[in-house]
Length: 418
Image 1 (cartoon, one colour):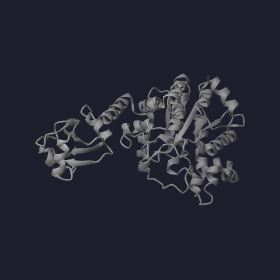
Image 2 (cartoon, helix red, strand yellow):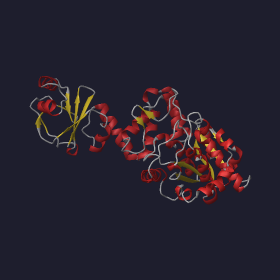
Image 3 (cartoon, one colour):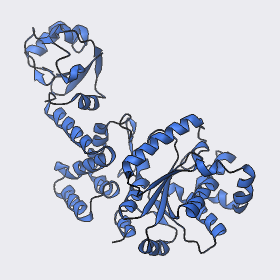
Image 4 (cartoon, one colour):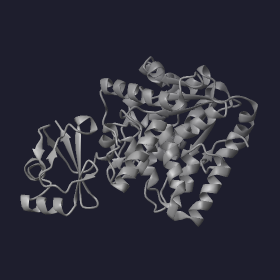
């Protein structure tokens, strides 16, 4: 099975410019290929991850991936997928974003020299306006550019000349990489088809019609209910652990619909066909065990955050389910209780009734606090407390940073020691 055969099995190919030609090429040599990303933010989200998973598969198959950080194109703005003009960022913000995304790429692809990261600012910034118009603008027909979906979709609301020229700049990227990095294949999302084919046309005009340059796009990822993949009620699922904790990341994958989980196993994991087919069978015969979802969460979280993050996420999940939070680390508390009701407290030792009412307002009155305590409805740091004369010492657990209260069976509260 070639890499292209594998991608077909995984349902990861939307369009190809020359299927037979690309198939021959991957059999002949280690192919140079690239995916680009503009530094519009300081982290990728899981939607960005989709084409880079394909790039990673080519890397593992022995090919030569190149990642283009769009320091140049990012200062212009890609109209793809946008209904209005992007807000231009300062160069300082772009450089900050470049550094953050580069670090994420190095984490995902390793540092063994089997891939390369380049920044298109290096060549685009050296081009004068006259060079741009004479060397490249002359080769692009406006009628053809207007017919590209990425532009045509914006004509009714309007598109600036700046964003209109984006496809020329992306085409220049492909040409530059073809000439200097032996890159013959560009991969992108379905909305990048027009930009990719424009790049191939430019290569053929400059290097000759026999130049072997190819494009491949990935299908638009939709959930079984027809909604866009990668969004939650809280917004995007980020790769940056400060924006989306590894526990939240793990939970996102664990909570996937039975109708979607096999597709996501194919897209986002490196499990082989036999393993995925086995998990698919369990979705049909033992859906209540959610084994496929658990394996999906383990594999993707490990790839993005490492194996330790998987262990921590599973520890948090187990503790929250059982109510025994005493064994969690301070780091795990920070992740697992991020979105739960919280209050800031001091490290002062107080009587439990006073603490629940006066310090944290977890209980509405001292009478209610005493009733809940004597009825066994209050747990402090995982331990049931039934003595109304007990003392709360915030420095006693979790490195003196937190006190966890559970009232009843499911209501958790987090007290942060300041």
